[in-house]
Image (cartoon, rainbow, N blue to C red; front, side, top):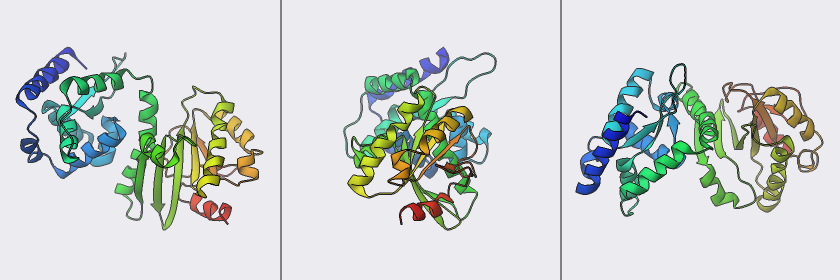
Length: 289
C-alpha cells in the first residue's frame, strides 16, 4: 500500500471514528453484491483482486473500479507487498465500515478504529497469509465454475474457524465444502500443504480423521493439495498402506499444482487414476458401504 493510500484511508477512518460510522447511510449505497462480498470477507478474511473478480464480476476492470470505490468509502481495506519487477495483486479485507456493518447487523457494539487497524496490520504481516489465500482460492475457483455451469453449486464453504465448531480438537482442516455437479454431490474436508511440513507430519493428520470418523460416523472425502508433484507422489506412497485407507477405508484424494479444482485432478488413495471432484461421490458411496 502506498503512503498516499494509507494516509487517505487513515484520515477518512479517523473522521468516521470521531463522528460515528453511519451504517444507515452506507447501507443505501451498498449493492447486493457488495453485501455478499462483505459477508464472505467476514468469514474468510482476505481475497485478491482476481479472486473477487472470479467470485462476483464479469471482468477485472469493473471489479477494480468497484473495489477502489469501496476502499475510498472505508468499507474495504487493501494492502500488498512491493515486488520487482511488476506489482503484486492487491489483497482486500474489511475496513472499519465493513466491520461496523457486520457488527450492527449482528446486534453487536461497533468495533473500535484502533482494533480494526491492528487486525488489518496483523493480517498483512501474517506468515500464514499465502496459505490462507491458497485455501480460499480452491473454493473461489469452485464458485467461479458454478457461475458459468448451470448444474454446479458450492452449497457450503466453511472456514477453518467454522470447521472447529463441528470438529473440535479432533481435526483442524483448512476448510469444508459441499459440491454438486452433474447430479453428483461430494462433501469434503480440505487440507492445503505449502511445503512447510514434512510428509510424515502431513500424513499424521489422518489419525485425527480416523478419530473423527469413530466419533461421528461421517464419511466426507478428505482432500490434500500438496505443494509439488514430488510431494504428492511421496504422500501417495505412504497412503497406500495407511490404516486409515486399509482398515477404515477413508476416502482420501490428492492433487498438486494450481489446476482447476473441479477438473479431473484428484487421485484417490491406492489408485493411479485421476477423477473430477464430483466423481469422488461414486467412491464415497463405495467406501461408505
